[in-house]
Each structure stands twice: as C-alpha cells, then as structure tokens.
Length: 146
Image 1 (cartoon, rainbow, N blue to C red):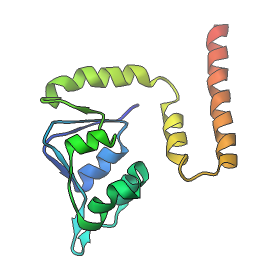
Image 2: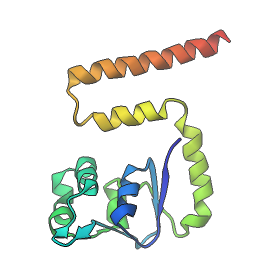
Image 3: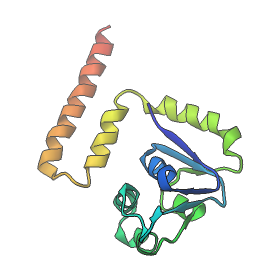
Image 4: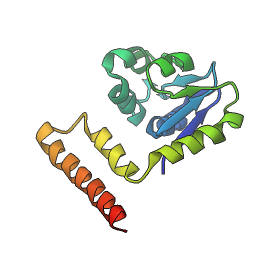
C-alpha cells in the first residue's frame, strides 16, 4: 500500500523520518521541515541520510550542517513534498484515493528498485529490473489467460 503523509506546522524528529519514507507527501503552506537536533547540534540519524539521498549534498548542506529549516514552499520545489493545500484534512481523502488508485500491484517492488538505484551498480541493478519486468509480464499473461 502507498504511504501518504500530511504535514501541518513544523515537522521534525521522528515525524520528519516518517515523512521522508512516505510515497506521497502533503503539507499546508507555512509548514517547515526541521532537521532533528540533539545535544551536539543536528542529530546524525537516518533523516540526514534520507535528505541527502533524496536531494543531494548541495541542497541539504545548510539543513544538515547548521540545522536550518526547510520551508514547505522550498520543500515542494525540491520535490520533498508533492502537494501544498490550505486544509490538508479536507483534501486528503481525494488525494489519498488518487494515490491508492494509481499505485497498482508491484508498488513495493518499484519502491525498492527506486531506492536501490543510487547505491547499486548498473550490472547488479539490471538483474533486479529484469526480474521485476518478468514478474509484471507473467501477471499480465495470467490475467489475459483468464
């Protein structure tokens, strides 16, 4: 199933960790993404890894090194968010239904292939992608035979 996350206000710590793993991300204007902080400044946890992996070093430099917040409008431009809406509570059902309808079978496989793409060699990835294609074709052939 697709994971839909909604941000209202400030989003940091564990909430930011969860947001960065979501498949579809909605926020209200004026919200901010806050890197998690600890006793020594920015906490060096998985949120920093996910931010850097999803955006690159240059885009996350200020947040990772100095704890700068990322306004929702900037997060939308950087594709950390998918949608800004004034009242996420009232618009969530329509957006969530659209995401669920578009997900289709094999979402977990596509998600994992996408996440592995930045750390897997082409040769290793080729086998995984061919296996995923074969799985889709077998499902298509089985559906056509019924």
